Length: 330
Image (cartoon, rainbow, N blue to C red; front, side, top):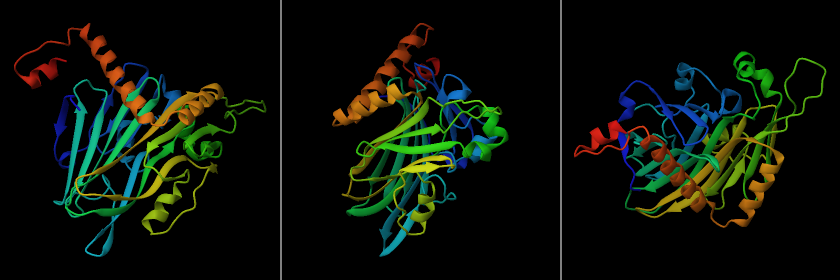
């Protein structure tokens, strides 16, 4: 899309390493080359995914953050493909891209056996929060029908102190509430039933994290992580619009038919520290907007432009005939 990216082909041949993804606002994200991550706004108390040390982040792939599973037919046999989690194979190519500006990272896996490519991008938006854009591409010369499940797991409610879930994670699960508050827009809120205090005092939890999605028309939404195991077993888990006492999840399931050379793209957007007024405003916006994807991409581009302006004040915009040297200077 006209932006420069550093590329690491066959990234799974390297040991895991940690990256920071920056923004023009108060977002922070530390993501492993394996896909596990922690992210939030402001401080660690406003985390979207648990704030952990880098060794735990490397082990969190598939347990915290994005998860994807795809069921496709090949030679009259249904095959389950779990991008970024299966052992390395000559038939799987994994590439990593990070923008020169530093505010976007893209994970890509190409499955030559199935003839599919899957990629997702993380990017910050001051207006919307954290934007994950996923794309499934049919690289084969035949039309393909696929079942898929994709989303986020271990989503934190806002206001949970890291020292609590780092020391006694299961206790904090007992306070968690995940709820779909607007089914047509797939808007969900992840909150605490009450603040976790060791005193007999009332302590309301008045902010939460939100998640919603754009694209993947006709998809079903469930907030129950157990839907992943059901999908892998070939079963249909009933949609769960309210889950209490367990870690938060936001999972979309859909069946799609994709023509050769075409793709299916969708976005999942999550944010933290949302009070009731902001949630109502977001719900009104989603109900009134036919295609939020246009506003999302515009917000991401605006954030990139502001970040370039900020860095320009630190002598970042030098130019030379060497594109890599120019990027390194930036």
